Length: 320
Image (cartoon, rainbow, N blue to C red):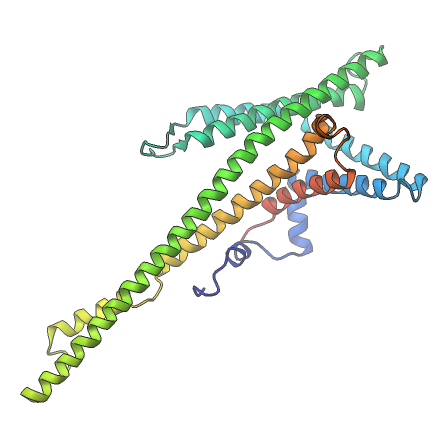
């Protein structure tokens, strides 16, 4: 890959398998992949239900029922998923951290990242646990089987608690995403700055080499013809110096640039998901109604929900 053609998108696309049916099937064989495909269909149904609410109320009602059924169908696969978050939290707690002024140790995390990841994990843990309660009350009368009113009240409390938990976790995720995107951009700018410095140093060396050759030719005209090739021990050094610093990009530099591009793309995808989640769950907790007197537009919520699911599908897509 040449330096001119190296871009974040080209570096990212080189790591992904083609968009075809076999890779789509491989992605849907993962639990998260299938869940997010279902989520996209559910939010698409919600968007279409909103679109047809005034044009075709009967179709809108059917689409809304489809959305509710798809959302409920995802819940059985989340049973005890909060245990995954507890395990993640234990692993995170066992890793050391370092502050801004301290040197990182092997396997350590920056303090901000550890705090943000812990906040996100705790929020998700509360959401999964509350979602299990919602399923056991709305999806099946397992809890309070003889009291529909108690089931509805418990489901409502669990839904509100879960929405608040996810919203807090998404906020931590969004803060971490902003910091990581900024760090990736700074690292990329630093790499380009070093490239410019190396190019300037190579140009300066070439200028000195040209001046030295002109001086050698002038001496040769005065003192006779030059010796056979290779007789001057400085020739090899000049050639090696030119080859090492003559503006060419080494494979290590190319790999470093590709890694920086992948880091930036990964950070942007993660930040985009966090923003989508914040939009959806800020609406679920009633933040927009309290701030503006009405909930967030259904189309915006639906698009944000599909965007969040699309990032997970992107991350689960088979890699080369």
